[in-house]
Image (cartoon, rainbow, N blue to C red):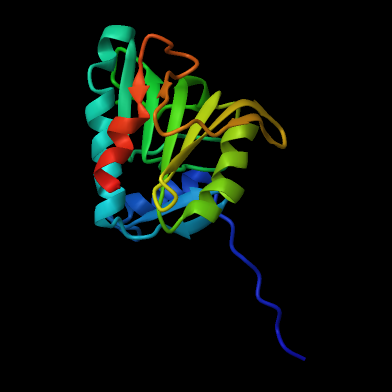
Length: 188
C-alpha cells in the first residue's frame, strides 16, 4: 500500500524564518497563502506596464494621509500575500517596524494576466475574510477592471464592472480619482 503524501503548512513565523535563513531568496517569487507557499508567476511586460501605470496615477497619496505599497507583503494571521499594489493608511514609521495588517489597508489592486482565476478564486476571498474593504482586480487580457467592496466571510458582497471610460475613486479615499481610460489606452 502506498504512502499518502501530506501537504506541509507553514506559519507566518516559519515562513519568515525560511526567508531569514536564505532558504527563500529575497527575489524569489513566492507568497504565503493560508499556510501554503505559492509560487507566483513571473512578471511579464504587460503586467509590469500596468503596475507602472497605476503607480504613476496614484503618486502623491501622501497629501491624503495614504501610502502606495507596491508589490510588498501584507501581514495576515496565516498569510503574507504580496498584492501588486495596495493603498495603506500612512504610518509614522513607513511600516519599518512591522508589515501592514489588514486594518492598515484601504485598497488592494491585483493586476491579473496569467493569474486571473487564482486572484479571483483564492486571493479575493482571502482579502474579504480579513476585512480588506476594497479590491480592484484588473483583467489585462480582457481590458477591464472589477471593483469588489463590502467584505464578508464568503467574499465581497458588491462587485462592479465599470466601463473603460469611467472614473473610479477608492471608497476610503473618494478624493482620489482614477480614469480607467488612462490605464487601458496603451494596451489597446
